[in-house]
Length: 224
Image (cartoon, rainbow, N blue to C red; front, side, top):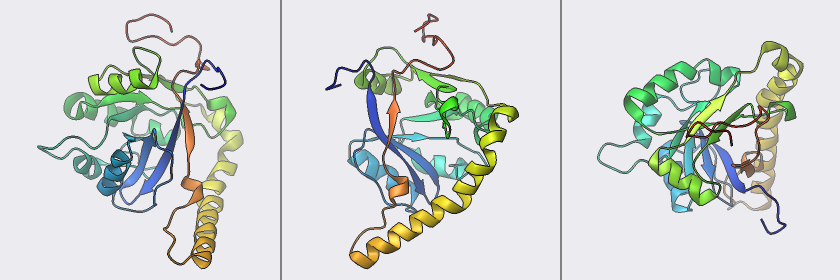
């Protein structure tokens, strides 16, 4: 914004908790890995962040399921999450897409979001969220009022095949090894240091960028 760009950039992080992955938006620091899900959500909210559940119910990646959602939506208390990802175009999102959609429609009633979960440049914009307005404050209001809308398309096998082996190797071997190595190095340098993995560090979420899929439908049926 200071440089006059016509996009809004919101810092965020995908946190690996004991109960699955949790998205934290509007935060400017990392959070400890492998802590209890509800406690992590509370910590994010205390830091002024917004919690979103990505790829819910998926058995192909570390995801929040029914038990975790109950912890994040305690009866008689304010919800610990602001929304749920109903459009994730990856295979991990596809296998649980219908279950998540039905659960949200019938029981959860959370604001819906789409996220491209892109691990390659070509996939950016393959899923996205629309909302009334243009700013981060508008987006937060839309979450509270449940006026967000999720859109997207699933990746084809032909699109995924060129990067599948590389991404699988990175997810299963390279990234975990990097996290462990950096954490051990930090502890050797400072035994009192907390277990924060840089690989789970800050990412950016652009809530106003034009979609790679073309004009976005607005919640009122017009292209935006």
